[in-house]
Amino acid sequence: MRYQKPKGTMDILPGESSKWQYVENVAKNVFDRYRFSEIRTPIFESYEVFERSSGDTSDIVSKEMYDFKDKGDRHLALRPEGTAGVVRAYVENKLYGPEHVKPYKVWYKGPMFRYERPQSGRQRQFHQIGVEAFGSDSPELDVEIITMGLAFLNELGIKNLKVAINTLGDPESRANYHQALVDYFTPFKDQLSDDSKIRLEKNPLRILDSKDKNDKEIVKDAPSILDYLNDASSKRFEYLKSLLDDLDINYEVDPTMVRGLDYYNHTIFEFMVTDPAFNNKEITVLAGGRYNGLVEELGGPETPGIGFGLGVERLLLLIDDQLDLTTDLDVYLVTIGEKAEKASVKILAGLRAAGFSADKDYLSRKTKAQFKSANNLNAKYTVTIGDNELENDTANVKNMATGEEHPVSLANLAAELKGIEEK
RNA sequence: GCGGUAUUGGUGAAGUGGUUAACACACCGGUUUGUGGCACCGGCACACGUGGGUUCGACUCCCACAUACCGCCCCA
Image (cartoon, rainbow, N blue to C red):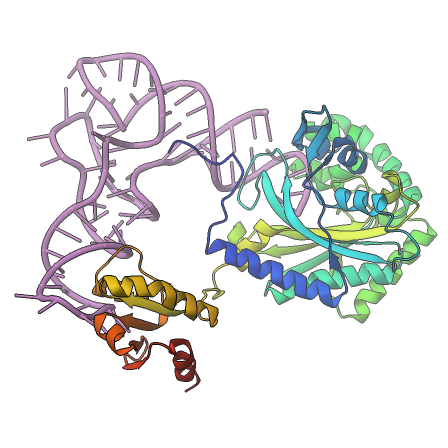
């Protein structure tokens, strides 16, 4: 084994790729119904796009970004997430212009890159499917996005979904809460885990998420964001919940839920699932939230936005197996002798042009072996041609399931097969 | 970036410091000449992740590196 793929990357081989196509097709169908259109942006962007949007204290920027200088000395980075590039495109193409319907709704899919330690369902090159909607601050839109995420996962048959929501409030509420957390945790500083000591400096909200046992004890009595929302933020959240109730969406408010990236405010949500594929631990498959302010951050006009992203690798671990995505082979052409071999080229081309999937042996194998292949490939029919058939302008068609055989006109092979199909 | 476990053929794997690295599946070929799914027979690891070291001798012991997986960080 001389060469191996870079650490944390995957070859998606035939068989596996059909599952990807399936997921992507479902995504497209569902998003179409909600009138979201696909947008495709570059896989790398100017480094600053991510630095600006994610916040330079975030781990993504400080240690996980694949960044590099190109030959023109431009500082670029492979995208670690999808939102920043979409926002950049939104601003650069002036999609906020009056001629565009608001909200401006898009979805994307594709590879993302983070320099981190690989684990199951977690690669350095991984894939996300995400959606974004710009230009409306409406809570109804928040609900549409959440509903669409649910519709997508439901359509894929994901079971045991749990919807967790929270709000970070508007910037004022968030700032007040931030201060309250600092005030609360500072006296405990010495008792906090090393990780949380750093979090206290950089991002106190993250302490709420700590897995350290001792931290959890301290977190128990920490102030809740819900007590620091100003009136408007609080009302907004209550209204949002009532909309979810109207839809009979089963959700849980998790006031300790936080976000990795700095740009979120108001509604945030995560869909979690418990599955044997992850040792029955609860994992997040889809996460998103509102990011009013991000468009401005990247140089656009004041524009509210909201979206979600989901990791395809994780998703695939959840849906695997059950699906039957095999594609049938209509015809396997069996050739006997050199003349048949020569004639096969034209016959195959004719079958395919007529819409049949068709294949043959290219290793000069014996008749028996060719039938064996046809069997392994699950061919519906074999068409056998040898010297006899060529002389009489016939082809021997065999139904592989029933074993029935009969000769048909070789010249009208495709039409004859269609006739048999219809019976 | 930190800690742990693992690494044998196409696949699942057994295995011992010392002549030919089990077994199964898959695949290929054959059981007389143009036919599948069963059965039987046969073939299929110049080789045990890579590089060093210890040893008379290592796949089996030690070290480093690589990769995978698990946990932490972080996150999808």
